[in-house]
Image (cartoon, rainbow, N blue to C red):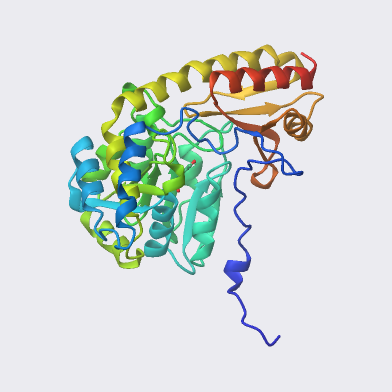
Length: 364
Ligand SMILES: *Cc1c(COP(=O)(O)O)cnc(C)c1O
């Protein structure tokens, strides 16, 4: 054919399917499909962002200095080892781009975050999928996948779309058993939803281990998904490699300002965490009450619930029924979960409304 040929590994990528906001007919729905913050954004972060409206003609600071300094101060890190990205997705791609390529293997868990497979395939690497243990990360299964071609392991903790969490001991065990030549990427997009005691110690590991990269995002509890801001922490050598392939101005000026203000607004974050814990527990109770109809929620440590449909009403039917009633959630047949819906915890009214709609659909 006389046309440019995309690389075969690029054509092997199944395009990412984002969470929807509208029905097929364009109707706006209550959006519980993208794990966004139902409380919105910290007012301080919004004000900081708006204040940058007068400097749109200037490129952002390519070193994201204020962002690195604020992150480092908050977590006791070396600012020189903080990498930043256009969302943490950017950093996941940087990791694959710098440490994997053709002939290399990249491991992640079945029912893991969809971006890992795209990031691996994009650079021509081979995705290797480790079996789960009742939807959760199984460290032994991950380790069993390691070969001399393994370059990278992606672990989301808590995991999306399952909400499951691997405790500190499991992460330590995984790291200890991995060859030192394998980069362990700990994706902590939902870490701020954990209680302090639950910390998986990923950041502590990244401070000392030469093969650990932790990633964080401002898209979830900080309510800044629209701005696309993420950061990561790893050894100086790893961060130096990531910088070589990073786009030069990958976090906007307003985004940097907003992120710094969001980090400082601990009241907003604490409120979001408390709201999430309360309504996640409440919704899990509602789902448990629909157990006779075959519904079961996977225990979640994040801002969503994965609900399994093992009875007469299928997940697809529930998905369509919820949409007809004004709610959009995530149905994930493309990720091997045709029997499940991922439901973001919304406001109180949204969560109550969602549960009532679900009861109506399953006849509970
Ligand atoms: C939402 C999410 C991210 C963050 O994406 P951003 O690019 O930072 O918006 C990363 N990893 C997981 C597992 C997520 O669910």
